[in-house]
Image (cartoon, rainbow, N blue to C red; front, top):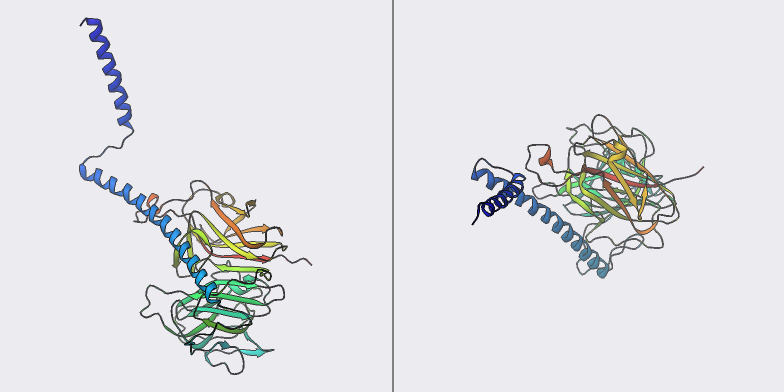
Length: 396
């Protein structure tokens, strides 16, 4: 082999070595084998957590479909008709707001067959975790009025959705949440009281009309009555899920506790903080609702918190409804992102059964808490939401 061939071979090997060094340069370096194993374990667990989150959402959707199929098969009726006849019907009766209603605490003013409630009320009716509750009333002007009141069983809130028809009739369908601290989960009765958790810090206005309640153990500061009444006729304690409403009689307005059972995806499990229940949204979140067509609405989102980011409020979140992008105005309440409200005008054309509303965070907003805090939480989080309301826009 000549000197020229040797030099060419060495040059080729030098080029291969340089290319290999470039490939190695992008790989992380570790001071020890233990550090390498920790990094590999962290990367593996991140992927496992993401897969588990995806499968959990899919399983929850499948369970919801199975529940609905069971309910439809059993033909569970609500509204004017009572629940389907059973071989062993429940002994517990509906709670009727009339002169015969027995209260543990508070006062209900009976007028025109409906009870008027203006401050906290307690009703003696043993209720367990998971109990489905349907409340019916009249005289509701907006879902903000209804969301200003909270039904609880002991310390466990009843979470669900409020529906309003154009004649002022309203219905609440919810389920008692089971708290992690519950022993057997049973409470001695229901409590109906004003709350500021789901109305965006409002201090007044027309609210849910129900009656007066005083607490047996006023150890924690309760929100002051907001000055309006809740007009309620009855509460039905169901032992099965409630069937969807009549597609020809869809509600004009709706308000949803996001911490309750929702028809949507992209949300993490329910959490209950000091101010109420909420869910964290991941890389995006959506919710489907049934609303009467041909009605213009104002969409209001009550937010609890968000991950740290430097994006301006109006650029942090996008709204797509029925495949159409809607301008969304986001404003903070107080310092930081501890409470925020987003509003949008929903055109009358967006109505009917199963309308899809999608919330899309700006790029870089959805992150894992591991990125900015020393916590062992690998979930992808963006915004946490307490409630969403779709209220009809009335013209003078």
